[in-house]
Image (cartoon, rainbow, N blue to C red):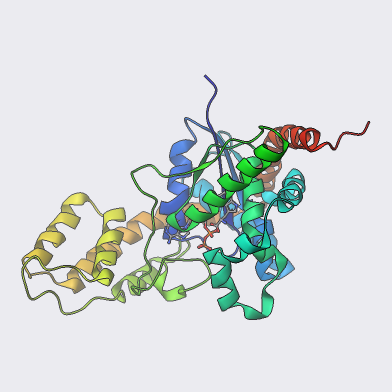
Length: 332
Ligand code: ADP
Ligand code: TRP
């Protein structure tokens, strides 16, 4: 039986963090054995925020290096840069004709960006979900490992796929978001507000490139309070967040002992955070060390990207000729 096709991307907009790891990368690593995987660096998507041209190469190498350091094997998957596949912008153009201004303006991530950067509300930002759809459909993926924040974008990809099929004939499957486990992951930020993210909350986000002491400092600053006064009381969200982080990197015995201490009102958040900081350091350190070494090996980074693009182009060119034919673009 042929393997199911999987696509996912990470924007090269900064340092990867724990949210990227648990929302996306961990799933990539697990999926590489049993699925036909296409994982890419979304460098075109990063252009919506006008990065400095001299930063692009380093940012792209870092995403590649951190993924390999986290366990991704470029021989088992196609690991490539989005901009190496001209078929993606071609499909994006085709899909843009089927995407309506009204629906794109309603997307919450677009509305957030309008609020964050009112001086730069460009068309690329508006059509961001269309480019994402092209990324996914270019390989006819059925599963897309992403964090919770991307759920709505994948729903739009399903709509656009259905719309293309309805107008031109059956070509694309309807992709589903994917996570090992029951629900999509949202790794909270350390300040108790929102999620960890590349571009915001520098001090409230744990990066895979953070040094041991930076990790300790950030964890110790996580928002807590003087502790519960009644047995088995409901946890405020910021305390739930600390427990959630502990769940990710500490053993279940450790997490359960603090949960029991919380319920019995004997919890000491200082101790809990010290424990969490050490477990976090032990989790991040090996990834960081490996990634730093890989990133410095430019020859290797180039070879990985070149090889990945070759693999990915095969399926992309097949899809784009099918799409052209269905649309009627075949003149000779
Ligand atoms: P960011 O939002 O940090 O800029 P990206 O947009 O490039 O990161 O996201 C890459 C992947 O990481 C996506 O699958 C996204 O859902 C996931 N992701 C990002 N932040 C988190 C988070 N805090 N929790 C879970 N998954 C996340
Ligand atoms: N938009 C995604 C994010 O911000 C990154 C991304 C771009 C992506 N294209 C994709 C994720 C295709 C999955 C599939 O997280």
